[in-house]
Amino acid sequence: MPSKLPLILIIGPTAVGKTELAIQLAERLNGEIISADSRLFYRGMDIGTAKPSREDLARVPHYLIDIVNPDETLSLAVFQEKAKEIIADIHARGKLPFLVGGTGQYIRAVTQGWTPPEVVADKRMRDELERMNQEKGSDWLHARLRILDADAAEKIDARNVRRTIRALEVILTTGRKFSEQRGQVESPYQLIMVGLTRPRPELYQRVDERIDLMFANGLIDEVKGLLKKGYPPTLPSMSALGYRECVSVVKGLLTEEQVKVEMRRVTRIFVRRQANWFKESDPSIMWFRVKDGVIEETEKYIRQLIDF
Image (cartoon, rainbow, N blue to C red):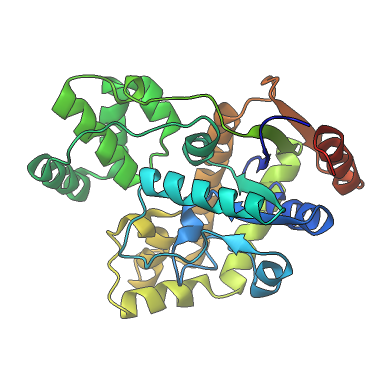
């Protein structure tokens, strides 16, 4: 038997089919699922984040979904701590943990022991960076990060304003690159990394269909509800793809069709960025093309590597 307890990772780009495959594998392998998708942390943000349905969530236990309100934050360090506690609890009960997501920093915070730089928050600097975000936008902030630390900019989504600001704060406070200040330790787990792929045209078609379904399911009404509850569009949670754009629809500045076009464009960019986080050339990841029989293929692969 391996000396380390297993952790199954299900990774891949947006809309590739991670959620359904993870649920089916967890059902077959006595597993439980931990979400590594930061968009799913927020309560009341269901449609625009493609959150699993209540029926799917009831099929197997899920963790780190609906754990904070939209005006609250969950830092990478807190996520890391919570995820490790949950994994330990799942192991203690004789079950198999699945970590599921498509964002590199959250996955690697758990699998590679990334630790955020221990730099005390500088409120004055953070306030200034947030002011610049209000005046010039998140793309301007991210461009500044790219100038100061291209490696960090490559790993941080331009729409994740909170993480962009934190990286800039650390750089400007310490005078050192953010990407050079992350600690890393050997993984405490037997990592079994399952990557999912589809042909790019097929993936883009699924993205388009998902966006159409979001609007059909009431994305605009969901955004109206968030605004009515007093959550402003400037919140980091509202930077999730689609939410801030839909505010423009609510205000009458854009049409639904214009927002759909923009969401398709930005999601395609995001899909290409995800390919840089988890490369198909990475020998530590076993990649599977999503097609008929992929459930059986991935189950067989996992069973070969762990003792059941």
